[in-house]
Image (cartoon, rainbow, N blue to C red; front, side, top):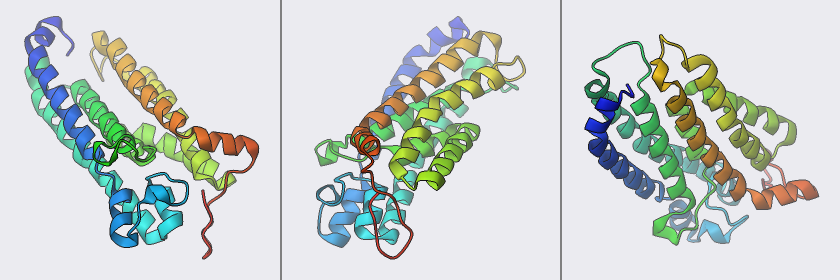
Length: 250
């Protein structure tokens, strides 16, 4: 699929479409539902409550379970709305590049989905509509993983659940789940996808490099956004989630 004659022939269309999906996904990601819902239901800005983070966890502790779950679902939905159009576009477009359907993995669809998901996450973290102060991007990253590669998603989810069960800290669970994202992506693409009956041999290196690099950048961004949580974890002052009636911070 990465044959040079086809790549150069379709490069302008690929570049333009990638730019459109990148910008569109960023703008969609900038629709931060925790900020919107807090202003509607609480008459306050969630960024002025609790930890100050515009995300589902802060909504959970500041506005209750219903608001927290609704925020999580809507943030996931906007990521779906960003990723699936890019994926379907390149799935439909790829036969013009690789010469027809076959057993190979449709890499353009994978990479397009990664790009859209990453830009949606960046919009959530740095929303243009809300002075570039948003959430930490965990839900959008997880949704992207689920849509692009369910194997990687299950690994990251497993890490999150194990750490959360042991610590009751969403922040620590999110940090380690994010750290597992590029590692799991590399393992899946290098050890399982790089086989002749899955993708063409000349696509092995681009597939591994592009997939691992974009997930690594996303993971680094999320971990950096958790730097205040990391300090509290190291100091032993990071608060935990409780499912009892009284709310505690995460």
